Amino acid sequence: MTIDWTAFTPWSAVIGGGVIGAALIVAPPVAAMDPCGVLEPILFSPANPGTADTINWWSPIFSQVHLDPVPIYMVKTTLGINNQISLDVRATSDPATLPGYDIVGPYPYYGHFGPLAAGDYSVGAVLYGTCVAALSSLTVSTQPAATATAPVVEFYNATLDQYHSTQNAAEIHDLDTGVHPGWVRTGGSFMAYVPGQDDNRGVIVQRWYGKPEAGLNSHFLTWLPPEEDALSYGFLAGAWIFESGATFVIPAPYATTGACPGGTVPVYRLWNNRPDSGHRYTADKATQQQMMNAGSVAEGFGPDSVFMCAVAPVVP
Image 1 (spheres, rainbow, N blue to C red):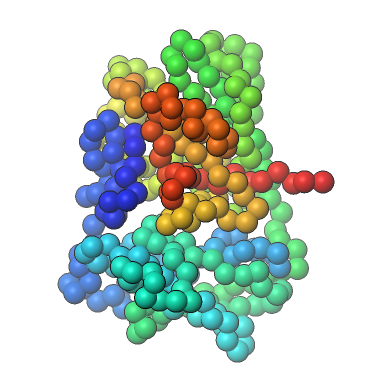
Image 2 (cartoon, one colour):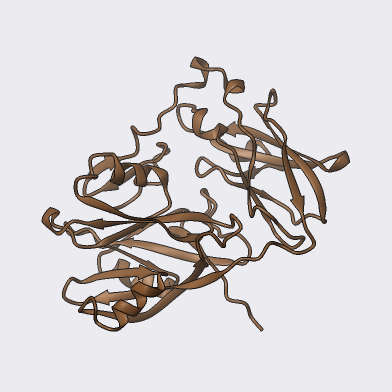
């Protein structure tokens, strides 16, 4: 599986030579719809930020308002009186024409602001300078909500020449003790949030298993809705079995640059470029390069192909 993030086609991805996602979410041109009728409240990550947190935001408006060609969405954040935050969102094909704005798209349309002083805030988005989203409430606490993290441990099976990463303690035990023969630890791992104990500080990663009778026998992890839809309901559904709706929770990189939010480090996804499609997930840049030198294809955002962002270890 390889994703083409440069084609400016919403949700474009390629699996085994077939395009998925390009037809899954294709909104009509702006001229054919009322952009003011699709505004939604702002969603925040983390849900309960502290005074040291950078606050990520997202609004479904951008997944429904589509220009041809797909534009770059940009935003300027303004903090006004009474702790009211305004997100001025514009669409452009030339970022240089909007000095003072941050790039937040074309996907996943995340923006960010803060850190902020403790207090209650209201946040709204203004689209194209005219359409105003409903205000969303945001409370910043002196201390952020509690979270739990655990390592996502990588295993390798030499017979299959496949990699497998899991945070599940029972699976790790079974792989370590030979319940599933042939798997050994590579020594690689990265930290992610435990599902249900993440304070909305990341995206939910789901997992599928490729059927051996379909020429596969590998696991696939993704947080991208078009890939999830293609594997669950699309033309790939017959070859893949859904295994878990929440394997772990992890922050996502910024779409246009691949940069990870503060306090996180890049995780790279590599596709083996073979009929028995398999992927490797690593936080080690040297490993990414070694895999690419051996024929694997890097998948992700920005020039470094960052797919997700692991929680950085705390330095004592």
